[in-house]
View 1 (cartoon, rainbow, N blue to C red):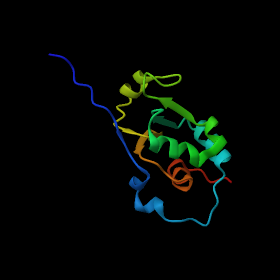
View 2: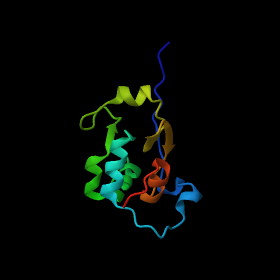
View 3: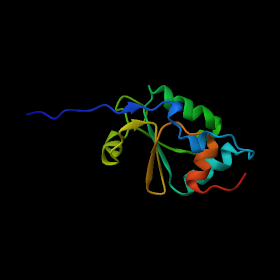
Length: 120
């Protein structure tokens, strides 16, 4: 009997938990946050065709170049589907921060909170 491949689902921006969706008075530096995420070895798993992943990347702008991004689709640029399978990725995008997984698009303020980023 053959194995059944399940495609990860896309998690839209509306999936952001209410605790993180609230506005914040603090302005988060995308570049500073991206550098912090890289320093703590945080990862974003996604796929090139995923609109929610594109939205997450847009929140960082040019700073996204510093984020450790793992392409899960074998047809994408620099794909690493084996890492996505090992990490049991079920949805795009998925963040792995400090050993925990978070599915969905998150505002920078939420990623700062999840990762312990306090800088600006």
